[in-house]
Every structure is written in structure tokens, then in C-alpha cells.
Image (cartoon, rainbow, N blue to C red; front, top):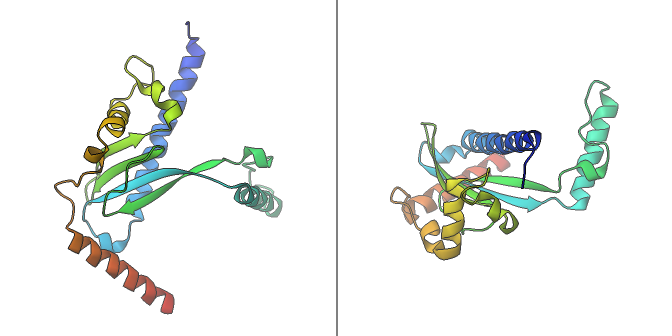
Length: 185
């Protein structure tokens, strides 16, 4: 099969945008982590979730209202169908979640900018795109898919620098108590 140079260029640009989106998601998650995490290593879990029609309609209406209130405001969505159907949820976590498709897991090491890729598991329908020899071949994704299919326990195993269960419980309790205190004031 022959690929047009312009098609390949467009696909590479889209692929790079995905990398920028992941980088920005990790950066935002690090900046907005609970202050109780301090400079402890923590996981960044990103998973894809569907945006329901009611919420998509609300997003569309909000965009319309912003444009009506401020004529200089550029519209993002001209019809409800233009509103994205899915979004990624980015969560800072102290323990590993269960491996699942449509998810990514990283480990951040503040105060440095070091981020370790634990897994990147796309939707099953996309797995073939990341195989060796493809333009979108990606070693970390291929490794993640392989482990997801053959050895999930390895993906989900504790890392040697993970906090103990007692430390995790103490920090989450502190977060809970601080949240109650903040609500009460």
C-alpha cells in the first residue's frame, strides 16, 4: 500500500499532538497534586471516560453563552456533535490502580521533572497501530500491551520505592481531615 506524503505528515503531526497532550496532563497533575503528597513519588493515572449527551449539551451551551456575552470570544463548538465524546481523567495516586485498556500510568518523582512510564494501554481496536514496523510503532505501548495480555501481575506489582500501606493510609487520612477542615471554615 502506498502512503501519500501529505497523509503521513498529517498523521505524524497528530501523533506529536498526542504526546504534547500527555506531557501537559502529567505536568498539570504534578502541579495540582494534594499538598499532603509533598515531594514523595506518586503515580499519575489517566483513563478515558465517555462524556454523556447531557454533559456535552451543557458544554455546548456554555460555549454559546460565553460567545454571546463576549463578542471577542471564539466559539469552540458550532454544534453539539462538535463537542468531544470522551475525556481523560488525570489522577494523582499513591498506589497503583488495576491495569485497564484506555489508560496510562506514570510515576512522578518531585521535585525533579523525572517521570517513569509504567504503562500506556490504548483501546484494543488500536493495538495493531503500535506494532513493530508501523509508522506509529511505540516500544512502551507495545511492552504495555504485551504485559497486559500475558502478565498483568507484573504491571500491577508494587514498585520498590512505593510507600508502605501505613504511610499511604496516613497521608489519605490527612487529606480527608484537611478537606473536612477546609469545608467547615
